[in-house]
Length: 375
Image 1 (cartoon, rainbow, N blue to C red):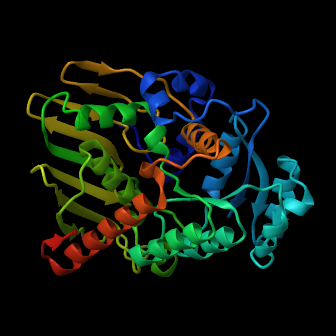
Image 2 (spheres, rainbow, N blue to C red; image 1 turned 180 degrees about the vertical axis):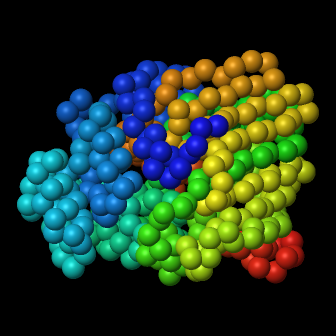
């Protein structure tokens, strides 16, 4: 695999914008995003991005090619970003907020949903504040830094009668919909082993980057990258893990990784007897998925990044369109909300809580050296 340093890993996001509509025609994708068809052509969900870091830029690019969404507002603590984003995306001044006046968004009927793209430790606060303002919420992964935080977020949205989604873009991606079908429908028999790992090599990063601060990130590579691996194992098997063992890898860059883990490996046990072994790393370029079943195998590489994905099974190549993952995800969510329907369970806050519970168990297993039950 080509050297997948951090910037390249992230920049691969934009590939495939032009085939989003083609992907939506796939039967599997249609079933995953099925919603009320009685949505007026001109009706769009007005979205405010809360936090304008790198990923928010990719979301903004995705919003430009969506059918059912528009970038209507922004929330940032940086005046220069407020000015530049306002000009670039033609955002009215009244729809531009900072972290102090954010709660005033309650009076803004031009914003329907807040997409929280802040550092992990800030997810809870701004999800709850958005909910209290009467706005639907999408929050990026991981949902929070503890499972109890996730529970507070879920309750706040329920109490405010708004819907909460987690940014699980791969639930709408054609290759991953196929992985889910192959695993859950046992196309090649019972899956016995899954290997799924994600990592890129950090070198000249700024030690002050929030991803490297436990108070802001909640952890290192597991929180940032490992959540994708945990998700993949769960939805391919259609099961919840019952226990885990885990190991921290030796630190190779003590300057960068004095506060969070650099790399970590873990093994999840599932009720069917399947085992998923994974590594998340800031020291190795890896992006692969492999599943071994009783009567064959299926795999992707690249697998859980922004693509373009490539894969095969024991019967031949997998061949699906390369899509803009963010645009497809946001259109699917928007269709549900515009139709006043309930979001599917696989992208809700409860799904995010389950992931966070597993991540906490992985950390505990690595710290104690013992197998930890996940119940």
